[in-house]
Length: 508
Image (cartoon, rainbow, N blue to C red; front, side, top):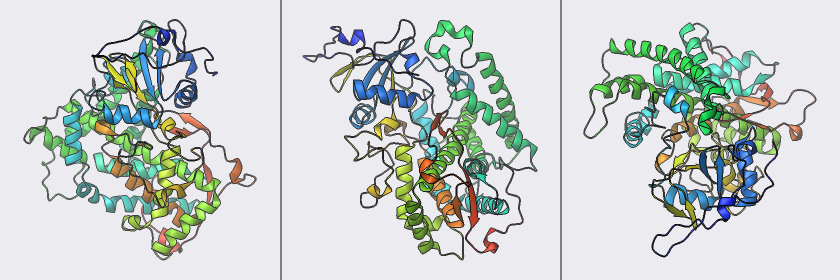
């Protein structure tokens, strides 16, 4: 869809000022927009790209009307720093309107992402579920799942495999075991298959553009999915989670010596044994948190590894550098383990560059501006605006990066950056108070999966395809997907015994 060629929004050119002492400011610049619709028609199928194109004309802090919603888009390092650091406390809450999915799908905003009590829920999850000690408990499980996956690919040698689908098996089974002690890809478990289908429906419904979120009086036309469809998905998913929680009620409460205690067990315990000033969890909180963990944990790792593999296929000399590093560290007589990861500095640089160019969540969920006016970068931010940071655009800011559109992991070899929200040039996991609490787990899974894939197999495109012509088009969904799946041939490069396992790796 074409972008608007009109001049800055008319209201941005009016004398709309607010006074705080001697300070005067006007709205950020932005496109004019249409009556009723505003700039909705400018968004197209990839809104992060559309916002990026508009920012080249209107600047790093941009004003738009999206239907009845006032939107402020931050698309530069400077703007992202202002929103997520300088004024972090002012912009840390979510808008109260314009998100029917949050109201219906996640238990009337009872999860970490949307709950008004998000600070206490976030703190609780970090302390009880996502500490390094907690993540270490599941290392053996992650390594077992990877062994099963490599064995599954080994059995399909000579056949092109969909890389994204296989990574999804690994990440889904890891997160499924950590949350519910259940492998989500297991051909012998019909319950797991049913839940996986429910989660697919949940993610598909949550990712849809809904006209009713932006123009409430058009809700009845159901563009992007009706409320009844959302309610149906929620009802079926809730029935499953209620059954799992009922099973938990008849299990003994875990102790610190229980080893691999799953998240549901821990959350169930916290429901009855809140400590100090911790919020006592409701059943809706528990179910919402589980959905947060499962959806974010599986999709982030899957998409990042898929994009990293795509870039390595496009740049064979970089693939060779990564493989040489892994071979030097691991050798060819054993599989990669998580203990090897700290030594794989170039692989870490590749992952960082993949997250820069292909952040799994290109647009942060909207933050709400406070009810009182704020001045940011010399501009008036209207109360109750939806403030969005375009992570995808920030990572392409020419003021922050040399040759920002080029995939070049070497930029991080001598100058590694932190992905923990301290460097606002690259914020794939967010920054500030709202940063993703599970980023350490996500990075660990991404590094481990990519190292294992590069070490265990030589990867090649189907006959007739050349690396330089690999289609890198994006598809915007709950995260950025490849528009065309990455199908590659895998040739084993380790001794056959390293692929042998008696267990089934699940089905694709």
